[in-house]
Image 1 (cartoon, helix red, strand yellow):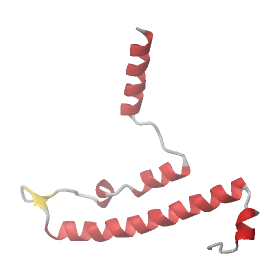
Image 2 (cartoon, one colour):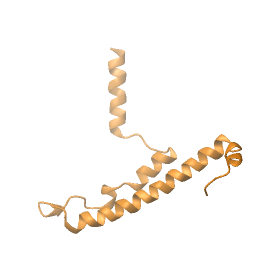
Image 3 (cartoon, helix red, strand yellow):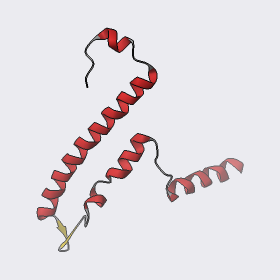
Amino acid sequence: MQIEDFNEIARLTIPDYELRMKAYQLKQLDRQYEIHLQAWATVMAGQTRKGKPIFRTFDKFFDYRKAEEKILGRQKRTTLDKEKLQNWIANFNS
């Protein structure tokens, strides 16, 4: 739902604005998913490495859940992030 009345925009609370922005981001994510799905079909139709598909599954090509979790603020730290943090702490302490 698009707001076109400036008075209504002025009455938006911060939580309402944040919710609308999150909804917009999720809508954009769905569009990205569709674009990537079409690209995936195109890639799978002809691209291979040594006779095997480069991406064996669609999730390796486009991780929808990871992108969604990032938008929703539920992204988990990866092992690499933990290693970077540990290295930073070790360098900071020395």
